[in-house]
Image (cartoon, rainbow, N blue to C red; front, side, top):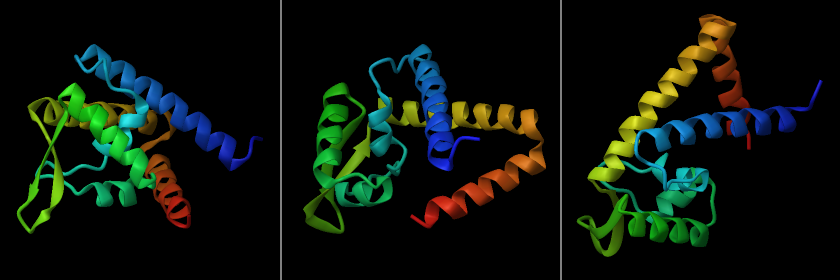
Length: 137
């Protein structure tokens, strides 16, 4: 049996392939899995780049580059943070919010299919254990 790293990589690869393929079909064909480091962690009201870096586990410079790309593609914009005018919030645009809604729906579909495949209780337990193990890193 493959080790947990190989299994995790295989699961991530298949999950991303399906998610981004379906997002492309829904009109978001310019997004790539790397953009998930921002789009999966951004709040609709905006999030600081430093928080996105922390939430995604990506280096600040990487997140900054991804924000630049997403801003160029029209998915996010930068605005002053009302709590601290020196800081900027990364805020999803209408296009970004549509992508977020589509991704949420697609992820729910994928998880539903997987739960049907192995049983709802087993899938719920798998997710709980997987989360516990992931949080240990």
